[in-house]
Length: 613
Image (cartoon, rainbow, N blue to C red):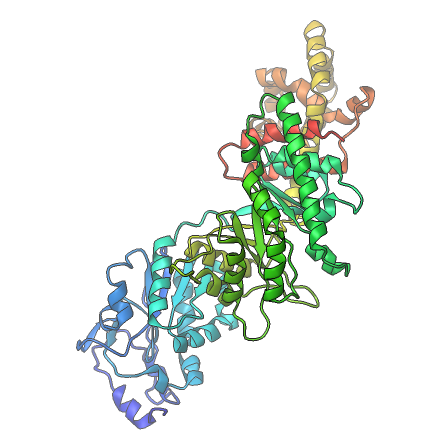
């Protein structure tokens, strides 16, 4: 039953000393709540993850106290002493969203007696304002009972809340729980695991390189995991041996993902042939083993054992989004022996689990399929994230949490690793981020694929630096030519004298020629600082006489004449594909946080030579 407005107005006749009540006309009311219930936003400090919980019906007798000290419900008792690392907010039936340090007048109002629409009318702006003031660069966790959860989800769906999603590192709303016990468990998990985020995608398989050697080389040079598909490395008649060799060689340095090609079957309306998929995996593994022995016998630097190499491979089990759980169980039982055999070699297997039909719960389907393989460590839960024009295969966050929180007969959560199938650079950022928050909260290792080249190659970075990388690549190809020219210059400094003559002939022409030699290069700080200002004669005169000029004139001349030198010496100029390779390599070398990037760059160069094309 809704509260009587007259009774509520009597209740809101607050003492005059209350400092944080908004000075608004007492009769500016909305149903059973009044704008008098909107509190002035306090001055809050950010820099902490945010936790939102709801108030409790049980309260202490204090007439006036900080919000965090008024309530004595089970959740408050449970969380006592655990929240120092958080900015804690409390969702109140009367006051909306309040910080735990805000002073409140005690009250007696139950959320079930408040009209939800009126609550949202009165408090939405205040809720958004408080969260927005402290969410910059922080995760937002909301562990709320169902009534408050429904209200908060409506708040977060408004346009007002878009900055919270944009500025925070993700928003988690506890859903699908079965009461106070599960709420406490999830609160415990996020308290234990918050702040452990390493990167948005975990292990990122750059699967856009499907059958492109240049991109494989570029990614490996940048220390990135790579991915392909049976569909792309086998044309229906035979394997592309160069791609297979590139994948095997890459596995000595980075993880490698091989998809089953199911999406291509769906796209081109081809039947999903499970025996054929498994036979292709068998043939691929045979090639991996044979190539491994060939490579380690011919290259002493490759010291990895065969099992270590195989453990860098992740395959995707055959799947069928249209199949029933019973059909899938039967299918997996029929191939279990083969799957386990590959796993014994070291291969990891992704088990895709698609959304259920009817009343079947997704967590029940997941457990039933896990049971087929007896829950081994090498099983990785495959979570579909793709939304097609005619079919939405993706899990929402409530479905994902229902599976991550599911337990086996021993009351233990059985999902230890998961892979986001189809989640990549082009996935909506907020959607991907919220999935990742769940994986981190449950302490689950995660990976993703479908990390495409296009977002990188169309970025400002590629547009501004692509030519520089191409010229730098050309300089590597001209290494022997440069050494010969350097020897010639020691005997007779022709190029040096040409620079000098150009300077004496025309300072402007000298400056333009020198600066042209710097254009389109990977400029070190030293080279950038030596760009010649055309209108500063005194500086130019000192520069031409400097030791820096004497040590760098040849490199700048070669860079300015790189294309002509390649033609004269029978060297093919850098192709568009090689430019892509260089761009990818430099992109990830610059932005990757891996400590051993020099190794990856060197290994990528070795890979390029090994699978030369």
